[in-house]
Image (cartoon, rainbow, N blue to C red):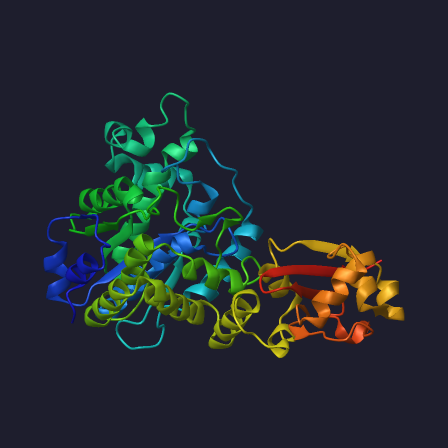
Length: 427
């Protein structure tokens, strides 16, 4: 059994730990859990820190439980929030839970014997728990003074918070009690902003049953520039390919700064310490090669999506920045093509003109104004400076027709080495 606390330390993943936790983990295989918010139908890369915590926990020989909050999602966690959020219907929550479960199954082993992972939904034990039973069996064990002292409550006293949100820490605390009683769960883990809620769980368990329980949290990751991890100008980076394409997902990791990737590689890779330190040494000797970024992008894209999606993302990356062939370009889906071409100048031409066939000079000058004159267009074509869909065009009389269209709609025109234009053919 690997020392889980030491594993978290060298991966820079340990923030707070309750006394006695390490001793418990070193003594025997321990069951621990982390809760996940079901307010979206996909986990984002911000959730990946906790997913990786469970993955490392299991690899160290312990039993991980992923708790998806079907019940707590109906209440709303106030931690880190400045205002109360909208509550979701049962149907939407169930849809979100099903989607998240499929994503968790890509990381955790659910069939490996005694420490097989499990997924539980706290709605299953709260759905028949009446309000009177809850305040009698749970509420009486924790004082209002204790609950008011939590940062998640104190930070909202000026603006106000509903009883629904105020009660959240009791609801989450009871999860720990239930999992301890039903599955002998001894440890709750989460992000550092969850410390107050987690400690309420250990305290409720101690007061209600007299049992000892343990807790640890991981740091909240921020980029070196202080911005939030997992956020881009385009919004969240999601694990669902329908929300964030594998190409954009791959690019997120590939474009990580040198300062950030040194942190990311330790958290999000399952490579051992020796392998990661060897990669860090290579990176420090030649940062321009971006060894850490490429290694992490390959590992995490393949795990979240597939090896085929990773290979496709690499090929797509070569479209603008490498020596990709026409076949690579034609193989792209429309969504990936548009992702790759984000930021590339676009122009529209009539689909009718393409159906009839259009002369290359007419296309470059009259229809798209990519070049200002026919004489300049002729000169550039004859010099080998024009490509359509990554194929050189060296004949000024050539006709461009529907056979050339990508996804039956697009043309990629390249002028010189670095100037690209996406031509959209539609009526």
